[in-house]
Each structure stands twice: as C-alpha cells, then as structure tokens.
Length: 102
Image (cartoon, rainbow, N blue to C red; front, side, top):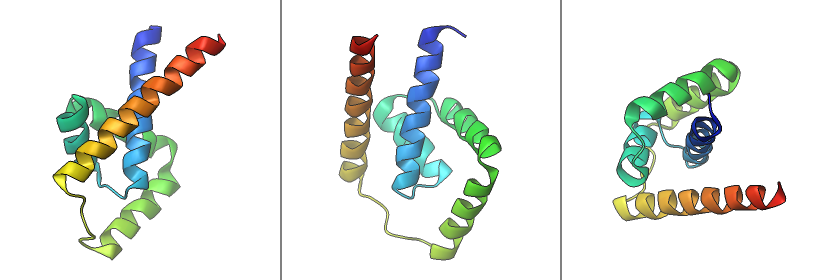
C-alpha cells in the first residue's frame, strides 16, 4: 500500500473515531461520511469492520450501549455537516503539521 492509500485509510479511521465520540451508529457514520466527506460507504464499512476486529471488546460495549440508550437525540443535518467539515479540516491541518515535522 502506498503512502497516499495509507494516509486516506488513516483519515477515514480518524473520522470514524470522531463519529464514535459523537455516539453515531455504523450506518449514521457511513451516511455522514458519504454525504459530507465524499467517502464511499463501502470504504467506511470496511475500515469500521477492521476496527471492530482489532477492538472487539470496545465495539461489543459500544454496540450494547447504543442499543440500551435506544433512540438518543440525533444531530441535525446542519450539526452533522458542520461537525464533519471541522473534522476534515482538523485532520488536514494535523497532516500538514506532521509533514512540516518530517
């Protein structure tokens, strides 16, 4: 895998982690990243599955807490868009900082 592919997957992973912080389900995350970051749902799904494999206990607890809280308040479309755009710009600036360090 070349650097750009690895970097892209790392960015998707980072965005998924942010989605988890905001208590999004896998489906909500796939939809949000598709709509607001132009990341194909199959990419998000694949990276999510790999994260599940590597962090089995976390995702079991996460899934359990998602189902026990039921339909928690979902973010509005504008909140989701704003959040995703901020995450992307933060990720871009962090990558620029890393490039400067090398």
